[in-house]
Amino acid sequence: MADPLARRLIDAFGFAITGTSANLSGQAPAQNLSLLNQELTAACAMLLDGGVTPGGFSSTIAGIKDGNLTPLRQGAIDLALSRSVSR
Image (cartoon, rainbow, N blue to C red; front, side, top):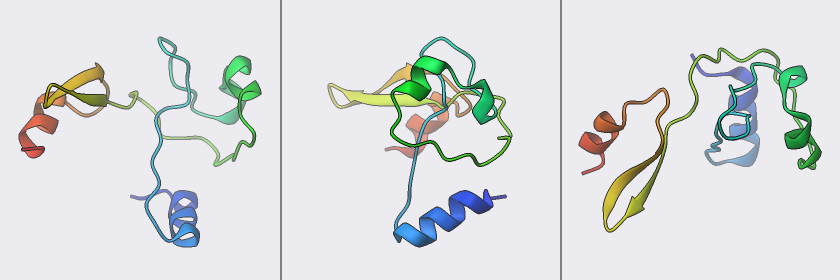
């Protein structure tokens, strides 16, 4: 089920939005605003508190190197599955 706050932001902007988990590299993702790393929050111009997130797994992040999908961080989505749908 889509997050209601995210849905309202998408509707207001008129286009899709995306983001990764709210954590510094190597740290567990924060499941609420109070758990965010202070270094991370200090670097933000604005924080939007959407309440507790379902959390669980970090985002899978990939890049393209030499024309191939390359893992930068393994997360909730299996990169092998991503490769099969990206072709």
